[in-house]
Length: 192
Image 1 (cartoon, rainbow, N blue to C red):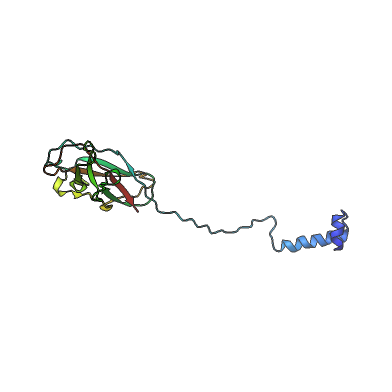
Image 2 (cartoon, one colour):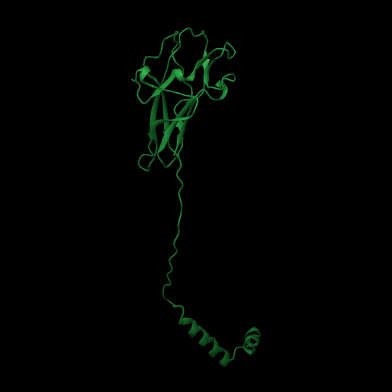
């Protein structure tokens, strides 16, 4: 208490100096002056798995077909790419969603534009494949429910920052189908 008054008052006596030096020397046994003090910190970071999807085009137009005709092969290409994720992802597909949902049956279809949606073609008449040369009848039918295509888009890396996969579409027209221009939504999604 007496020493505090002396230091605060600005008076430094030999006894106070000796006391302060003793404190410094005592601290010196805990801290190394003039040397290096090193400590280690363990740091953890969690990087989440993410997948990303980009499409090369968002409009597919099939050549005009007559009833009972199909595209013969899956030929309309859509390139799916991932340039922002870090995980491999399964490509999922569905069709006939959104504005092409048939309000009467609750199923997704192609709908006739000029017939004010009265004419429909079942979405299952649309097929996909991972090859442009796949026969229409060997393609996998698109359904209104999101399902796996069985294809995997590999994860981007530093060496390969953009990974791609091409999916090909084909279409068949049922017998006695009304003439019209038909539209639908086909959804491609990645799951990782």
